[in-house]
Each structure stands twice: as structure tokens, then as C-alpha cells.
Length: 145
Image (cartoon, rainbow, N blue to C red; front, side):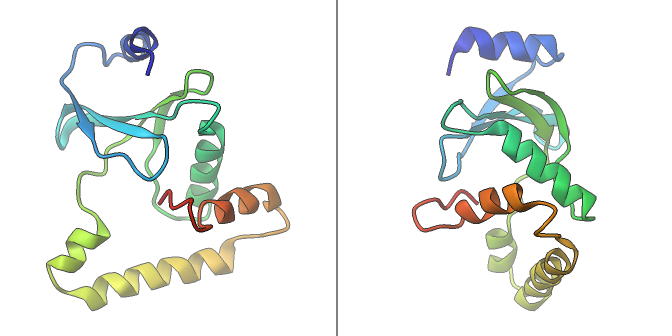
């Protein structure tokens, strides 16, 4: 990461003088940082270095999923050229952590209902390019989610 560009992006969007903590990345080149205090006035900074990461595709997919009525983190600010985005902080809870606490059936039903909703509302003909991108991330070796 280019530290100067990183700091300039944060300063430009009003997050230049807050605590920053690194969060685990995913199986891509993206890195995530929490800005501010956990669960209190915090946002996430996504560092998605181009050209390996296509931040524009991520933003477009988030917009599409939101338009289909699904819950996605709000994109607060983004710089596609630098590969930075400020996104809503949903906290640290994940499906795997929820499942480990028990009540599996409830969470599997929520996940299943979400997939059914996506299947019913997604128009493959209208969003063919995005569908290709979406399916690519699920190919073996590209487990980004």
C-alpha cells in the first residue's frame, strides 16, 4: 500500500485522525482496516489495489444486491484509481461464529431464504457482465468470499 495515498484518502474524507486497526483480509489482495472505535462511529477501509482488484466491480455488485433488497454494507466513499473505499462497519459477527454458538437451523434458514430471494430476483440477461464476475469469484482458487 502507498502510505501517502492512504493517508491522503483518509484525510480527504474526515478519517485522518482516528485509531486504525488492521482486520483480517480475505482470500484476495484486499485488506481491511477498522477506522475509529469498534461498533462506535467506526467504518471500514477497504484497500483493493488495482489492477489486481476491481473495486468498481465490487461497488457495482453491492449496488445490484442492494437494489434486489439484500443487505450490503453502504459504500460511503471510494477512489477507484487508488483502490480505496470507506464502507459501513457491520461489526465482527460472521456466520461461522453464529453457527458455533448454536441455533444453526435459524441461520441456515436465513442463508437459504437469501439465496432463494437472489435466485428469484436476479435477472441474468440484464446483468450478464456482473453475473460473470460473480461466478468467477466462486471458481476453485478464487474463494474471495
